Image (cartoon, rainbow, N blue to C red; front, side):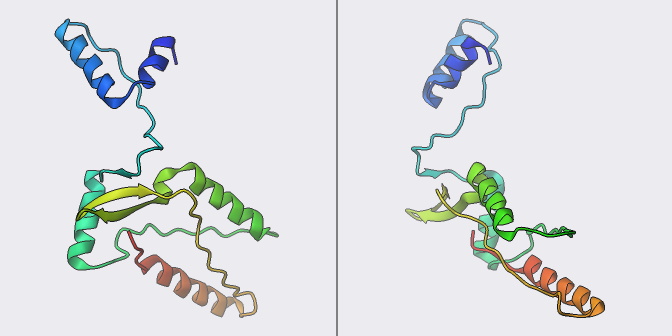
Length: 152
């Protein structure tokens, strides 16, 4: 990032808008402005259009697993479960969207990013079952989880 971009990225949203208006008034082509990080000081943020749609559908029709994206991975060899959990917790820590939730403030839905929320784990050991039963039990468990709704 060049020096000008660094200075612009440090400006508040209001000052960036003023800068854009000044460029426009003077007939100067505005350079591409960097996308700044959201302020960590802000407690609530407005919902995106997609979030508004999902929130509205849930409020009208009730909770659903319709928007869940289910996947799985088959791991071979020994797995250190505590390290695997720490890895997923770190991913949640780094990506605010994974810690975001929707709550009502003054009757309006807003997005709130929690500080410390991790992945909820379900440990299911099917190793004692015969192979055919194990696959069927695993498929049932995955289908059940994939269809489960979660609190926005």
